[in-house]
Length: 267
Ligand SMILES: *Cc1c(COP(=O)(O)O)cnc(C)c1O
Image (cartoon, rainbow, N blue to C red; front, side):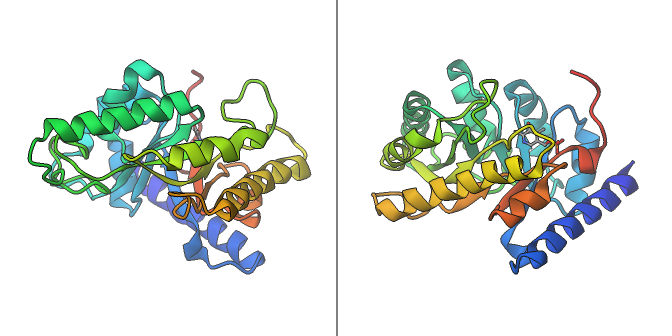
């Protein structure tokens, strides 16, 4: 199994690199986030041992369940992003294990995250940095990446519904600038960019249009020059089936699950 995961990971990296070169981009401009939902810790560890350094969970329960094992000594340092719908009653728990929340789609959620980071900071009293640092965890962060006392802001992205599909989360593109500038102004959050789930369509042009829409949102927000928006450069978009289209549209981070871990059992 470990060997297969390592081979699949290499194959996905080749796909990303090829897709970048085709459009004249540097492969290094595109990071690979492994979507690890439903994967046992052993499979996640195999991916980390094979060089993965950025993981994403979309279910809070799984994030909490795997957090302690992935913080153990000997686990390669990595970032853990939250990429699923975040219920407000799960904010505190998710914060403990996630280094970035990619799925902020309301100001209300952003304010809850901001308040939770502020509380955590206050709980630390002396304001010492979290063990293991705010951006990675693994060996040195037994309390999770955001132990009480951590002073770093929480990285977030604004999720945009670029396909118009009613089943998808995300702020609509026409309201994205307003939301992003409000999120960027919150003191305990750092807006890193934008995330979308591409259109669910067999038509590559439709999928590509959804990714180009996210790039347009990002460019509009950067153009405002509003406080805190200067760091909002990431475009998290593209999955196993369509990452080439996302890279062509400017993705800086693709989120891949099945192409590395194989098909998931039906939910
Ligand atoms: C599962 C998941 C992915 C990866 O999807 P695959 O088709 O398995 O590559 C990407 N983004 C999100 C939000 C996911 O939940």
